[in-house]
Length: 170
Length: 288
Image (cartoon, rainbow over the protein chains, first blue to last red):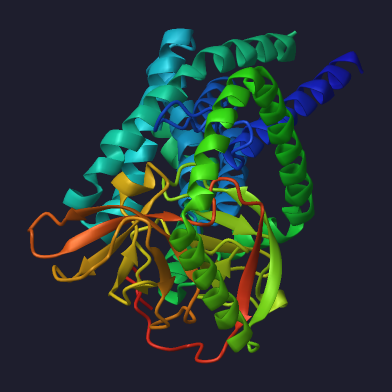
């Protein structure tokens, strides 16, 4: 009974964290931008989450998070839905087969996921439509700084999910 | 790892992935529609997002009021200097006369277009990844909003609707290079095309391009829509802030500061009907 109650609170905390990060991704009121770098906190969040949770949960959470982000940004091509679902699966596989589940691994994986996200986003939405030369400025001035800035958030999120994982396993 | 590829979980994930890719291709093929899963989620969460936008705007107001409080003294000194400058400006009769004339003309344009049908909308989310500040409004096809409908505020043109869902729509702003608007200098009648660029969007500006080298445009001139393409004639766009040569030195361009403060707007009007709607598309990028 106690364990079930504990899991319920963990579930609520997870929902709250994801909703907060989704809300932060769709508002400019609490703008965390530094010059051109705008963090997408959902990227380190899905990384930190997927390291500690099972594969199926990661795929479902990634799918829902991506769909929410698609809905917020009015993106019609399911880009975020596909990316976040795959990210959840890939991070789980890497964390359980190649890396340890420590801060260094989570930060590196978050960095790789963030850079990949902005790079693929640039290819799909900028390079195809506007030509590589014309849109290169996007990846250099917006994409890469935003990816680096997003990765910074992996540190607090790693500690949050490490703590949640400890409570879960008690 | 190899066991994973043989597992049932992998097969389910692969099936969902293929389903999403098919959905994505269909959305690209149809164009102008928000994808079904985003549309359903958008419709279900629209009321929550409207509440969230209100809370977020409230937080923004509080933060701004604190900022303003801290800067009140500095601002007061600056305002005093500004008032004395404004008094000098007021004495400039010609300028005032010209501006009055412009606003009179604008009112006349509005009076001349009783066919405009407006749909008031609220911004419920913004794409913070988009340097061109696109956003989502709380009106969709059930409110008669269609793809390419112009979006304005009382200050001027904001952009146009690029994707329509059931109860939400995506608006691409005039800062985006995907938009190309036939435009006129209101003083000289010189024509050009308003289209965004990343370097201009960083400063919240757009560009009036394809201006002839013999044109008479000047800093401070107002830019309005010419009526070609998807926008009705006479909508205010912005004011020219600087003029330069294009990279091949064949024509000149003007940096235009939009009248609508795209970063700060919360409410917009969608023009769902006007005379001459559905004319030639002069859109760049994904022309449908």
